Image (tube, rainbow, N blue to C red):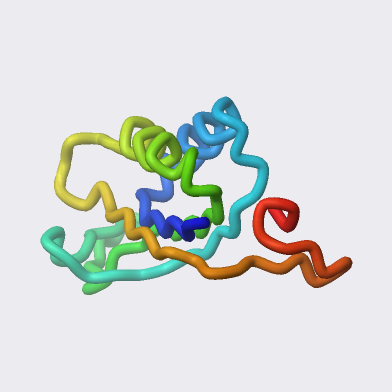
Length: 112
C-alpha cells in the first residue's frame, strides 16, 4: 500500500480528477495549500490593483492505493497536471503498513 501526495496547480485540478477517475481511483482527499519554491511568489490583480504574494496557492491530493497501481496513478497525475512551466508541482510517495476503515474495521485493500 502507498500514500501518494501530489501538489498541483489549482487550474489543473479538474483534469487530474477526471484522469484519475478514468483509471479507477475512487477516493482521495484534497487540501488547499500554500508554498514557496522556484517560482518565488505570484502577482495578483484585484479591482485594478496588482499586488504580490510571497507564497503560491496550490492543491494537495492525498491518494492511498495498492502497490500494483501506484505507478499508473503517478504517471496519470504527471501527464494531466503538467504545463511544462516552473511551478507544476511535486509528487511524493510513502509506504504504508496498514490502512483501516473506521466504520467496520476493514483492513488494507478492503478498507479502500
